[in-house]
Image 1: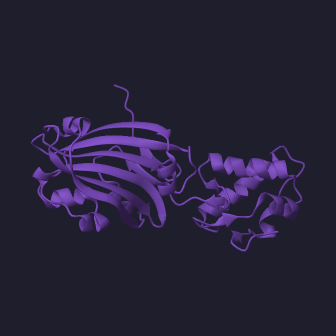
Image 2: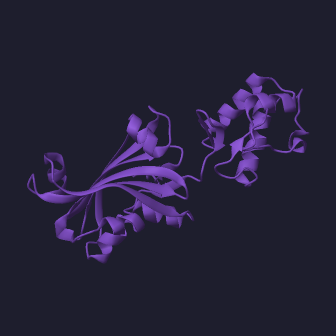
Image 3: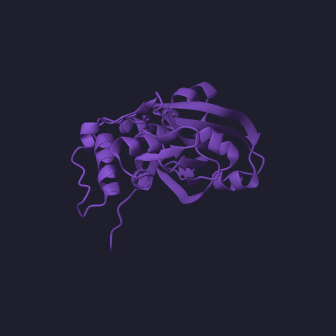
Length: 254
């Protein structure tokens, strides 16, 4: 039985499957789906036909269909969601190793960036945060936790600490504007960034914020940005969905 929300590719698309050739059937099926996804026939967010229905319609075995879908998951084109099924992922946000904000990266990639501010408060800096910002422990800083969306998909949870020396940044401004743009407007232009990139599993709370399964892997980034005078102007600890975000850089052999 096909769910009403599932998108069916036309039977004619699979008419030329070579059922006796050397190319595995699962690979042929996966290729058909990949072309449909890249051409926009299956747009981001759409749910593809379930394994049972697709196997019956194409007269193929369920293991063949399951392997085809898994190859699409491995390629980062679709994601399996419990209770929903297989869904085409939203366009991935790619960031080069440059000193930009995620808000700017999404916009430059043609997406619509928007934000939900989860927490916003003035708090005494903990010892690790104070060390990163080069201020005494206990100095009051602005702490903000935000969920950043690309179109309607949550991409990252951003946790930042901002020293008051850069000027007041309001919750309302963080709702609508990227942090680095707000810093530049106050004369604190990020010139140098010290960052550490890693990976870990999400907590259950983070999984809910990012709309992914609990225990899934996320990319982590810890960054401190400095102005032209070498003063720290923000410290951030962020997590990113691996199906919607990647880092891109060039390695040169010297």
